[in-house]
Length: 265
Ligand SMILES: Cc1cc2nc3c(=O)[nH]c(=O)nc-3n(C[C@H](O)[C@H](O)[C@H](O)COP(=O)(O)OP(=O)(O)OC[C@H]3O[C@@H](n4cnc5c(N)ncnc54)[C@H](O)[C@@H]3O)c2cc1C
Image (cartoon, rainbow, N blue to C red):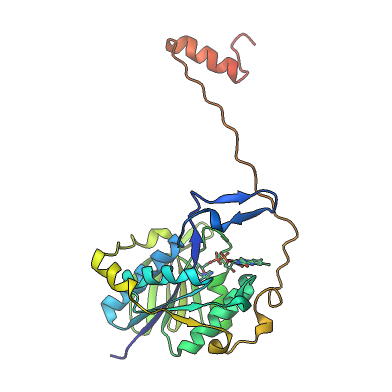
């Protein structure tokens, strides 16, 4: 059996329960909350590690982001990845989904031969769901999106359950290919204390533009065709609550009155 290579795409995102929004600028204030791996990418990683456990091979986690995204890659190593590669440098900053996918695609080509790429279905901050399928297009390989189950793991083919357009499909895909995974696919494992300790010492490869052979013009703002015309963060909804302590009959009447549906009308 040949050695299989699995690639997992992982983005570091702010904890969306704690993050604050800059209402003036209409953007997420990333510095306002702790950073963590995008939750869907942990499902992707778990599935790659399961594939490795069944058929052998190695799992390489790749992220594009600032230097602090190294911690997300170390977390991936604690959860079963063998290597972490971080694409970082100021040339990458300001990239839209097109430039991000192009850079990730070039990095995967620089890794060499691969069998299956795993990505989350979307991120919790950008939420476009574009990067996985775009990477597959740049690499000219097939992909299946919204995978909620993996039915058969083989050396040259994968069989999955995919949920799209309100229907459930069972699909097979020849490898090399890419799948994007939903939260229903598995329950990501928790790393042990020993695994965390080992991962803390792991060396994360930092790659820049020259390592992935990409023209700088295709990155950052210059390489990003998307223009954001305007962004608005809806203000938090104001909610009212009311405690009705009377007997059920008068409580119902009070509620109807409050809802302007009084019985007398
Ligand atoms: C004009 C413009 C400028 C921008 N400038 C910045 C900026 O300066 N800094 C910034 O952080 N964002 C910036 N963004 C947002 C940036 O485009 C997105 O963060 C990025 O393209 C990923 O998109 P997404 O979050 O919607 O991912 P999705 O498409 O929802 O992600 C799907 C999956 O792709 C993979 N993936 C996505 N992004 C990465 C990544 N970076 N590394 C590894 N895997 C990944 C993950 O597996 C993820 O689950 C900008 C966007 C625009 C339009």
